[in-house]
Image (cartoon, rainbow, N blue to C red; front, top):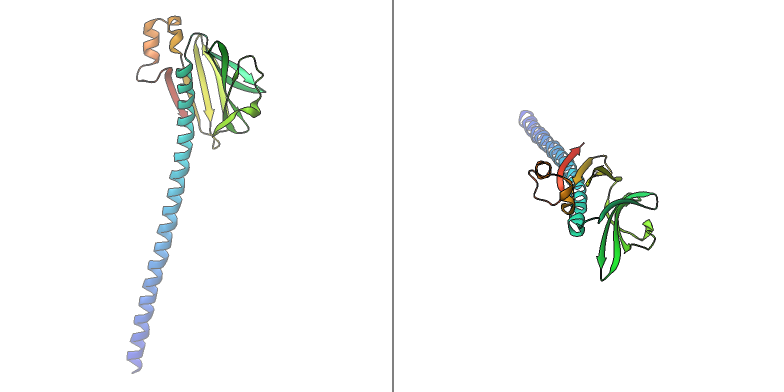
Length: 187
């Protein structure tokens, strides 16, 4: 009887140990999967911020593309992309700038003062820069909160006469978007 009882205890302990190993393995797989999911989601959000912000700036340029409409200025102490357009005989300016950790847009009459507090926040990012890279060629740089940087070279169509056709074609090769000639991502 003792032998039979001993076998039952061993059988029970073996089953309990097997169940414990299965339980620990399951928890570890779930933990690894959750970590991988979190990393993929964070990376996706970073990519979304970079791509959306650069696409947004490019599309705003395309909408406002007319001779002399694009310039670089400031809103408060922040460097801004300025897009000037005329509506019903009035001149309006759209300012795109970084303020308080977000990309902002401000649409106002050209002769009105531009206050950064009155803009509309669009996306969260840590830095937005624009500089004139060459005659009628601008470099827009965006840095996410996690330090990923991407830049875009913009060349308005309205100023194509400033370049000969061979240079313009080589700059926009492989790009169907107006004004996009180069995009680079730095980790």
